Length: 90
Image 1: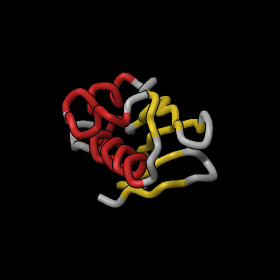
Image 2: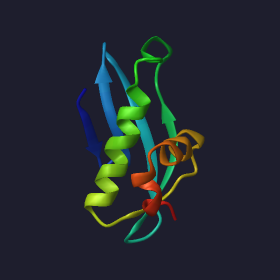
Image 3: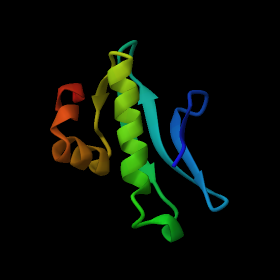
C-alpha cells in the first residue's frame, strides 16, 4: 500500500479502490504535529489501512525529528501497541 504525505492539505493519504483514506494533522510549531484524526471509508475498513497510514506518519515524524500529539484515539492506540513509537508522543 502506498501512503503519500500531502503537506499542502496536512494529510498522510492512501488511495485505494477509487477512494481516499487519510490521517489529518496540524503543525503546532517547528517540531510538533497534532495527529488529529484518521478516516477510512467503510468498504476499506478491516484491511489494515489506518494502521499503515498511521505507522507511515509516525515513521515520517521520527525521520524528521518531530514530536507528535496523538489527539486521535487510533493514533494513541498504535503508539501503545508499538513501543518504538512511544518516544515520539508529546
